Length: 358
Ligand code: BGC
Image (cartoon, rainbow, N blue to C red):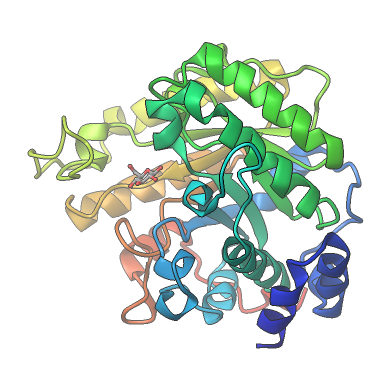
């Protein structure tokens, strides 16, 4: 409660934000270096470790009283063995008019509450702009919103510890072609760098952060504080079976993933291709989303989830599972417990009771 009240005030200014983080002890608990210090992007990426996507579809953004995600979940996630929250943000519905596109006070209150409590629990936070549908439909029309978002968010967190990461845009797709994406990301990055010269920024390729389109991604060579993200849902016929939003796969269920050598090596070879790109371009990799929708049988989903997470770890990547609650869930909020099959596939050795005593 103390943190919650403090963070409400904290949205007023950056200075207060810093004071509050130190009052709550979050700087030391988040294993932090001073704000703005230049950490090697590879070690920053390793530090992300095992993560989980949260809050994208939580009614908390409409009203605190409707929140599914509660204060206790920060600690549960950290003690469960995760190190990072990838917070899926839909800020456009909380913005005022052009040209400022001012983010509402209530959006800031919730965002500050998430960031300060995550840091206090010893978790890193990725602020992921998840407005991929808006940009997919109208990339040109939404460019100013994207830039206005980072123009407000970047200065607000300029003194935040380096456990706070920015992700420019989730899954650019559709009208956000590789060419437009390369332009938009460079513009957003320039805005971010005005206040956060060395904060680690996460950016992935167009065409849904696909492992097959890294070659089209153009990053400013001199910026070495970038982490490259890919998402992995192949084979879609398995991971998106029965999913209403995936037209090609929504009507066909009963697809298994048996973990045959052939199935395993399809994933391994996709990941090795990414690894080769990573080495050649000297950029670390975050697997920012993966998982299999819950219309597939659970034995297949466990095998698949385990294999993807373990393959990523063997290559030294960090990852974030899609997603904490709701569909694909690893935690059942209604029962207040981990959904064991998926949880064990992700964190085979179980939670970390020392999570808060490092
Ligand atoms: C989307 C979700 C979707 C998931 C898997 C995410 O990026 O935000 O709506 O369930 O991908 O398709």
